[in-house]
Amino acid sequence: LDHGENVDITVVLKNIAKETANNVTAEISTESQYVTINNATATISSIAENQTVEGKFNITVASNIPDNTKIKFDLKCTDGTEEWNSNFTIVAHAPILAINSINIGKESGELLPGESTTFTVTFSNIGSSSARNVTTYLKSSSEDIVFENTSLNTDVIASGEQCQVTTTVTA
Image 1 (cartoon, rainbow, N blue to C red):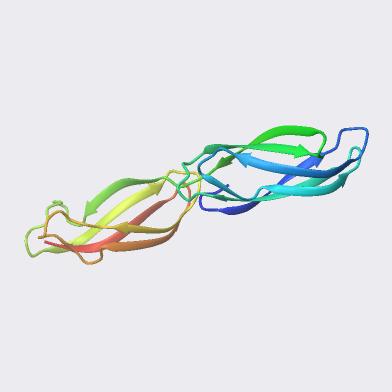
Image 2 (spheres, helix red, strand yellow):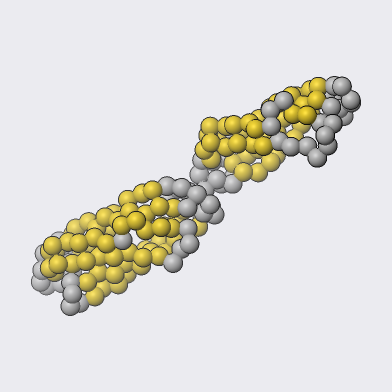
């Protein structure tokens, strides 16, 4: 599962009983604050002895889910008389962006009044999922420092990849 993803989950159900199970309802649930279950119930008219069928569910994963979060789902099946309970876990993936370096394009690293140079931020995605539509915002605490662009966009930063954003800075 990926952060921000809307996905169908298919669960395979097998009837290990010696008779057909009729009017089976399967329902998933989770206590995870990062998952919204959009379709929690699957209805199967019958499952013959040793037959397998699929139950389909739909969930949405929050865009702010922490990387490698284990999401436990509970599965309850019933035919109105008997009840069978099980659970399964799925790991969710998300990006983690880390700043590697900030570079002012002068050897001295010092920007004198009236000078302009390049300003580059290098960062890495150390998470297990791609980061999409990343915006880097630049702001100075000094009114004397002006960035040519204060908002820099990057389409995709794959897991394990580095990215640089560059603009001009003037003192």
